[in-house]
Image (cartoon, rainbow, N blue to C red; front, side, top):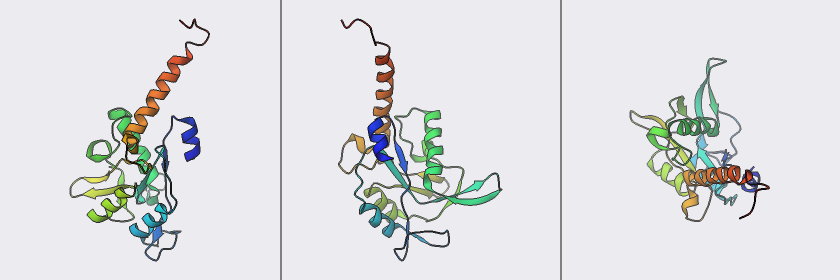
Length: 182
């Protein structure tokens, strides 16, 4: 998926990462307790380096309106909703994070309650935390891409701006096909 996004040069892959429990075992059921440290260590070992992807942690608990029950789902499910809300309120080049454009009002809780150190450790390792603050509800509290090197492209809003510029320029350029080149 990352290779496809890079080749297209106009997409951002919202990647769900494998989560590991407190024993370092791949999480396969909701009964296992997800570990921030083991999840980060295993993600870091994958050596992913691209500005065309972003990832989030932890899983979220949302209401399944069809079955009228709570379900644990990967963070990408909630994040896509936040991206949509961001684009409705602002533009693609605004950060889909924080209390205004990264609010996840439809999330009941998360699989892991993150503390300050967890949030920093995740963010330092290019994983955007989903967390809550007293009286605010759940929010996306980061907008890093999966790019290792420090640059403007290690931010989701900048990558989405570049993607949007590429789309607009491509659409305009396609109208000049067979026109005089002067």
